[in-house]
Every structure is written in C-alpha cells, then in structure tokens.
Length: 218
Image (tube, rainbow, N blue to C red):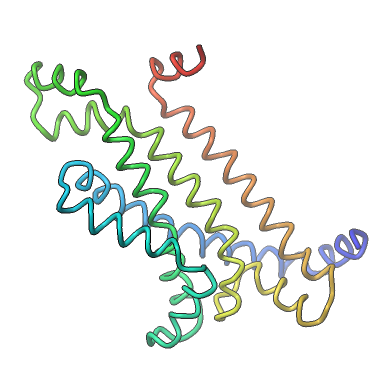
C-alpha cells in the first residue's frame, strides 16, 4: 500500500502541492477571521455577563453540530457549493476554542495584578493591552492552536461540497476503492496538523512572559 502511495505521490506531486495550497487556504482564512472576531468577543464576554451568556451559548451550540452536517447546511441556506460555503462553515466551527480560551485567559488574570496596574495610573485600555493581554496571550494562542488543528482535519470534508483541498483525494479514493489515493489526501493532512501544532506550540512558548514560563517549569 505504501509503495503505491509513494509512486502515486511522485506521479501527482503537482496535484498534491495544489491541493495542499487549497487546504491551507481553507484553514487559515476561517481561523484568521475567527481570531479577529473571537478575541474582542472573548474580552467583552469576560467583562459583561450580558455578552457572555449569548455568545458562549451560540459558540457551544455551533460546536455540537457535526462538522459534516454544518457543511451540508450551507447548501440549502443558499450558499451553494465551493470554497465560500466551506470557509463559512469552517469559520463557524473554529470559533469556540479561541473564544473560550480568550475568555478563560482574561478571567484568569489575578485581581491583585489588575489593581496594581490601576494603582499605577493605567487607564482601562492601558491595563488591558499592557497587562491583561500579555498575561493571557499564551492561553489565547493555545485556543488558536487547538482550532487550527481541528480545522485542518475538518477541512478534508469540504471536498464533499466542492471546497477542494486534500479531501478531494480522500473522497475520490473512497469512491474508486483505492487505498493509495485515500492516503494521498490523509497523510499530507496529518502532516499539516502535526506541523501546525508544533509551530503554534513554539509560538505559544515564545509569547509566554518569562515569569510565567519559569513558574510553569518549576
């Protein structure tokens, strides 16, 4: 099986590279937009219960919908097929990990630290950007890391609604009952997930304030 996979990989390397590019687009666009949306929402949710209850409830409900069902729902909703509905569905599916980690990260900042910052004369926004976010950023990056890895796997299903990516090989391989074609989509997707997890893990470590890093290592 692996011999057939490597032979097919060499034969179709241009197609695989194109599929990888499509797959990365299906991952980074929804996760990027989710990050831009959920970090401010997570901060607001950590401050105001009026925001917290509906926002967290909606994100939790979206996460409970099976990924395949969420992709399929895009068609009757009028989004059609292709990359656009796939990106919208993947965006919705990537919200909860980042939102939850932003909320937890901000809420976990010690009250004494916040009081000290206020006592030094910092305004609300200065305290947020100079104290709370730097402390919470490792937790937030952890949410982005989780979301990215989840979406790399889920994006393989986007091929079912014409979204492209590595899932095309998997769906075609299943239809033709060709194991090497299935592996041509599955193995690169798994490698992408491992690389993304490793890189974002390093980013999470680097952005962690030195004091917190030392405390964790003790």
